[in-house]
Amino acid sequence: METDEPTAGGSRNGARVDSSEFTNSIGMKFKLIPTGTFKMGSDFTKPFDFLPHFERIHQVALTQSFLLGLYEVTQEQYTRVMAENPIDNQCLNNPVERASGEDAVEFCHRLSDLPKEKAAGNVYHLPTEAEWEYACRAGAETEYCFGNDISKLTDYAWFSGNSQGQSQPIGQKETNAWGLQDMHGNVSEWCLDWDREYPRGLVVDPTGPSNGEYRVTRGGGWCLLEEYSR
Image 1: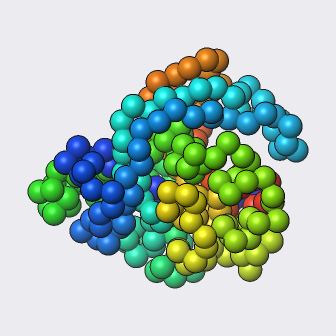
Image 2: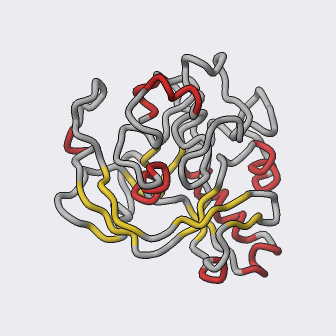
């Protein structure tokens, strides 16, 4: 099965943490995500939990606030930075698709190198898997950011049951409690981490291994069933 994966931009610029939101030089909007501790993982009772040690519930403490994109990176934004669009069906306000993990990392590097971003001291990177799940949950301990009622997912996400067989423009669904959109669907999102078994006990600011066979993706997608969006 083909996975449609966009880049997901983040920044830990200390000069920006006094502002809850900002917009960068190519129009990407960012939200300040506070520090905190949360339970990462699931209870392994869902139909697609076939590798429970990869979803072992454990405590994670994030000790640094960070800025995360309010929306998925659009095709227009990606093209402005990379000078190409990897998808044939071009809809500039839809999230970029079919960008590899290496493409996602390169996008962050090139965005950081733009003159206005360098002048502002902004440095971009993919979110860690822990940062992604923490931001998606926005304080929730349920299957989805809005609770456990899967029938409500259509209000928050694009998935195979409502997407009309393609990605959709950003910003059309309900936000989570921290104002982030499309965390549960539309396209899957690359994380900084490489895949690994979840640890036991409390971990602080985890980044996962520095290399591996598969880079982590999160967030479901327009071509996937609802259960993959949790």
